[in-house]
Length: 558
Ligand code: ADP
Ligand code: MG
Picture 1 (cartoon, rainbow, N blue to C red):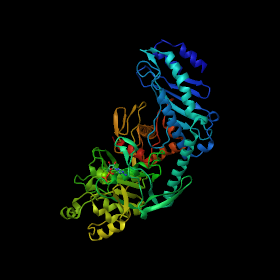
Picture 2 (tube, rainbow, N blue to C red):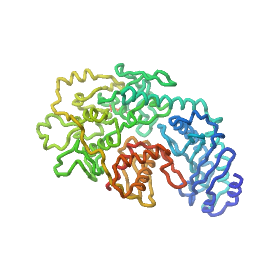
Picture 3 (cartoon, rainbow, N blue to C red):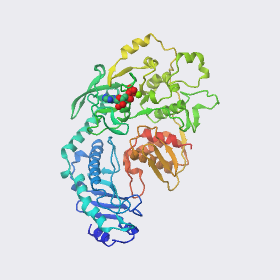
Picture 4 (tube, rainbow, N blue to C red):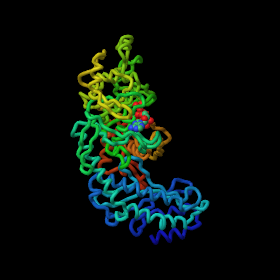
C-alpha cells in the first residue's frame, strides 16, 4: 500500500502510459488490491481492478457460503451492496475523459452467479471486481486524484460491503432464508409432479416494458381453489399457491386479461428473484423454454421432419438447413432444438407464434389435402411430445378453441385472476369434435445430431449488444429471440462459452450433446470465471445449457 502510494505520487504530470506500471497486487489494511489491467488513455475503457478480502477478515459465517444455493445468494447480496457503494463514489474524483468513473456490475431482478463477486466455497474469501477510470488532466497523469480514489474513496466502500461486521446482518439472514425457501420450492416441484408454482400474493406484472420492477397497485395473484397446493418451506412455513401439473396446460381468456403476463412470469421464473420483486415465491421447471416464431433465423442440419415434410422444393427436412427460415420452420426448429438440449417444458404464446405452425382448421384440411401441406401442426404433436418424451407445454391460446381437446388443464385469466375451467371447457368442446387425426406412437427424430464447429481465430474480439446478441470479429450473432437471456453479462458468458467450444472442438464434427456437456461440466466444476482466459475476468453471469445451445444452433453452418 505504501509502495503504491509513493509510486503514484512519483507519476504526477507524467504521460498517461506511465500508469501501466501500476499493474500488480498491493496489500491494504483489510484486503488485497489487484490492478489487473490499466487503460491506455483517459478516453479508453476504464482500468480493471479487483479486491480480495480473506475469509478471516471478512468474517462471514460458513453457513452462508458452504452450500451452493446460499453462496450464490450471498454473492448476489454482497455485490448489490458493493455496487451501490461504488455508485456513490463514482466521479468524485475528476478529470478528462473517463477520469474518476467507477463501476461495478449492477444485477437485475434475478439471483445468478456472477463473476463480479465471488466467495470462496471453502475459505469464505470475498472478491469484488470493478473498473476505475484512472484520472488525467488533459492527457497527463493526475496522481492526486488516483490517490484519492484508491486511498480515500474506495477503502470504506470495500469494508462496508465486504466485512460481516458492517453488513446489514438481518437482511443477509433474510436473503439466506429466501434462498433456502426457493430451493425447497424447486425440490417440491419435482416431487409433486408440477412444472410451475405461483404463490398466492405474488405480483406478476412489471412496472413497464423497460422496467423489470414490480407494478405498483397490481392485482395480486390468487390461485383457484382447484389448483391450490400448500408447500412446506423451511423458513416461511406453509406457502399456498397455484401448482401447474405436468402435461398440457392452456391459458385462455379475453384480450388484456393477463394471459401473456402469466406466461412471461413463468418464462422468467426459471431463475430465482430477489426479495421484494413480487416473483420470489414463483418457480418454473428450470429447463422451461420459450418457443416462438423467428422468421429469418438460420437453421443448420436440423431434423424438423416431425413438423415439416414434403417441401415443394424437395428439400430433405430430416437434415434441414437454411439461412432464412420462415415463421413455421423457425418455430419448428426452435421446438426441436429445445427438446434436443433437454427442455422438459415448452412455453408458447399465440401472440408470438406462427399460426400455421400451431394449427390448421377443418375447412382448410378439406380444401388443401394433407399431402399438399408440408406442416404437421403443433396441435397434432403436443400430446405425443408429452407422452413419449415427457415434455410438457404451457400454451397461451386466446383465439383457438381446438387446443381444448388436447389440454390436461385449462386456466382462464379473468381480470388478472386465474380460474380453472378444465371441466367446462372439455364439456363444451365435446360438442365440437376435433376433426383431425392426432399423431401417436413413438416420436422419431434424429437426436444425436452432429455439427461442425468452425475453428476459432486466435484473437477474437467479442462485443455484446445487450440482450440482442453479440458481434464476434464484426460477425453478428442474433440472439434477441432467446427471450429468457437476462442481461448483457449472461450474453457475454454465452459468447465466451461459444469461444471455449470453438477452441476445444473447432474444425471437428461432433455431437451437439457432447459440446453442451463439455461446457456445462466446466461451469459446474469451476464456476462462471472458468470461461475467461487472461488476467482480466470480465463481468459475466451464469447462463443455462438451453441458451448456449440456442447460440450454437444459430452460429453453426454460417
Ligand atoms: P393478454 O395477454 O391477456 O392480452 P396481458 O398479459 O398482455 O394480457 O396484460 C394486459 C395488461 O394488463 C398489461 O399491460 C399488464 O401490465 C396488465 N396487467 C397484467 N396483469 C396485471 C395485474 N395482475 N394487475 C394489474 N395489471 C395487470
Ligand atoms: Mg397476450
